[in-house]
Image (cartoon, rainbow, N blue to C red; front, side):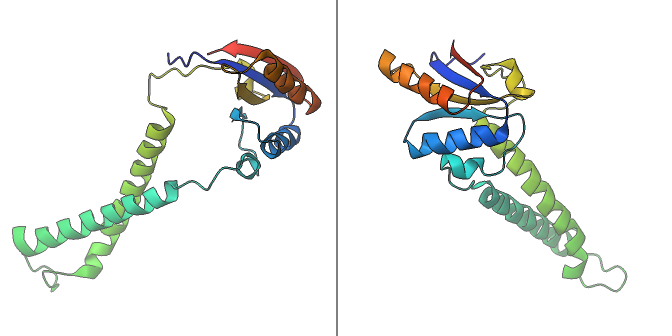
Length: 176
């Protein structure tokens, strides 16, 4: 189990609209959010947290082009150098015949590459146990968390006040 050795102050919210407003207010107040946990994707959360757009689609494009190049070059080598047979009246290098396999390898490389990249970036490999703040986060609660390891008691109390004024139904501290 991965441990961070951090004290985390977190508030549990009952509704996605309430946590979205709380995150927007925390970002506007320049509070350092440790993380936001939701049981399902919340539309607009990236904008509320001030996150930039993911670059995963650029990685997917690169992986797809690698698949296209692999398929096209491999079939070119097979049909022109390794096994040059004229069948069905087609020339050795028949590009239209390459299209189905090229398409399939493009999709395969892009999808597998993006999954591996996503898992690597987020540390979601099989067997990895990441610490959980509360079991209800994956069920029906929304969570806004702050790292209070380096905070004074006054700063922690201000964050507790922030969580209570933004509608947190429960406020807890956990060492992860």
